[in-house]
Image 1: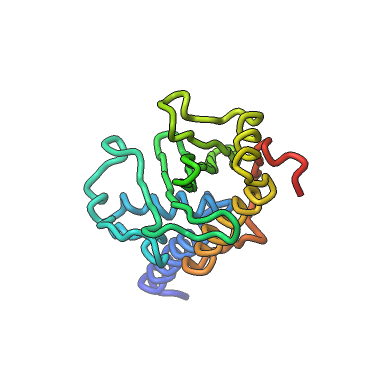
Image 2: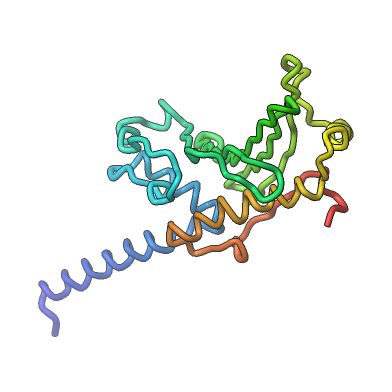
Length: 216
């Protein structure tokens, strides 16, 4: 018959195992974007370190400062790559992340300012934690105009600008895929011990921009 001490040790060991299992396999995490969301949420925790801490090229800022900030005080956390990422077909792009904890969303954004053409391309992936749905949006800014006229988000007008500036929709689609899957997801998979990969994202629905309809 087990002694009282042995029973207490068994209970404590069981609790520790459950905590470790919960930390390793978080039941809230259903896909790779959930990993990013809940991983970044650690800036509010005692340790203050997030998986972005370990990704080469991500701007290093003192995330531990956020330990003393409540979500009511600051509901949004930003991360970004320090340098632009050079794609195979459409130049260099800025990469930024926005974690919005009051609305439970992530915004992954890519920007390419083409000086000689006086336009700035923007590709956004907006992810909703609760619906497990990510929506892709493509627009650009005509830097010769003032807001709100400068922002071009109508598909027909985007196509006109692309044709005018000799940029193919196929190249833009392939560049969007390169930025999201090869760079962002590729780095996450490689440096954060992710349970997911670009070939196995988990439970998530990605809705592509209508701009790419019919483009192989």
